[in-house]
Image (cartoon, rainbow, N blue to C red):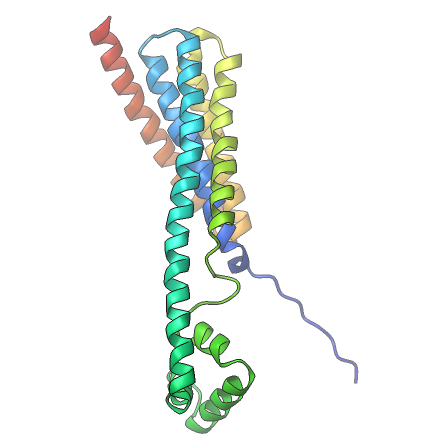
Length: 233
């Protein structure tokens, strides 16, 4: 009897880089596009609008990279501390740790005998990995990766911010605000679709979510720019 394989690919395997990438691109489009719309609404020169956009891109990319690195590093520190504690407990109280694992399996639906057998086999194979996965929720798929998250955020923020900057270069000055808003919303829509497909989520919900918040941000900054531009003028 031949043995067949059934390979499966799950979206959770992408969660580490996908979260950082979607956040970076979304923030790049929304924050840079909104700033450009706000500055342009104040009726300043195109060159000043462009410089403001470039400054927002550089500052935002560095902020995203630093923020992701610090945040995910803190998560990694917590994971490592928990693993060190678990290692100590496994060395000092192996029988209690085996029973703890068996109790976890029983709460998940195994009968006591099967749970004890499973716990014994897991403890014999790789006790730390078993406790990390089943007790702490730490696995190779979900473990924190600070550098990966920081790089993904910085690069995707830059890619997202480049779209409204490009609109400055090609749009007539008379419709600059509208052009940047349209380009930014279109890119947000595309990002929502790509993020939903990559994560296996409903497209319509993701699309509406990113476009709503992007439109709201640009509307508010346009109002502020118009208000201050009128006051200064």
